[in-house]
Length: 337
Ligand code: TXA
Ligand code: MG
Image (cartoon, rainbow, N blue to C red):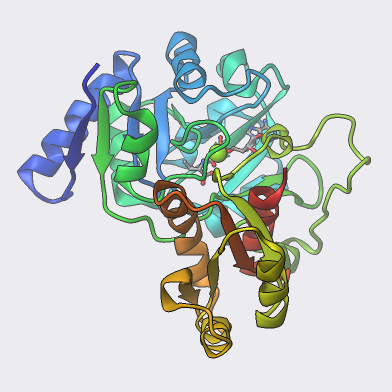
């Protein structure tokens, strides 16, 4: 199958035609790559089990890792799950946006979407193309990140093409995503949110709204709370090491058999340059005071390192609060194994 990439400018006739074409494909049970504000998704009609099965096949995704159903309104979400008072509050505050709610699943949702769990994950994205696609298809869209299982999530249409060429008929190109890390996932069944995957909407923010925000600690749950979090993830072929600052980065580099690529802050890059590291080994991605560009650029930087055949990466650690918690969560997984 040839994969077509269609650039989408929403308020143009060609943009509307691209959305209509993508929506037709969703309705006929095919897969479409599309942008959201977090990362690119690989979508199928969430109510057609056979279409959802194609997602697992295209990604090479383990069957026990459930998907997020994307909606474009509260009205579309309500028949899919039992909304708790907490979920209603979180949805009111954060939807549309990068928050996924795990709730008791209603019978309308096929087993395969939830990987057989009694719960379903729901998200109302804020990206205009994602919203237009769901609205036009007039059905909830099941969508994981549009990468091959285990690879860094796609933040550009070109990344989706890298992983999905010849496996899916269409990718909607909406340019680079805004956030760059996947949505915050919370279990919203109880009184307080339980953080299953950190994202841009932080635990601190959720605790302020809901009175508290809990974290499952290792060993506290029989099954991993967000099944996907147990798999190797976000992993480039290069080996990834984490360093707190330039002196730790230099120590690690000195022990490696080949020169690493440094994915670091502007400040650390300057210190490394002063210590004699060549400029072509340095990728300054962010300033220490503003982590948003680190979140936005990290997956693309990991992919580029692979394309360029890098063997070793040294990435800068950040403080584990707010967005920093989400960045460290992804870096730790990239560095695992
Ligand atoms: O930002 C995002 O969430 C992106 C865009 C495309 O919306 N999607 C995404 O999907 O990251 P995926 O499949 O790559 O990650 C979904 C995560 C996995 O860790 C999965 O295990 C968890 O959500 N999840 C899905 N359904 C769940 C459920 N019923 N209970 C617990 N965790 C669930
Ligand atoms: Mg993913």
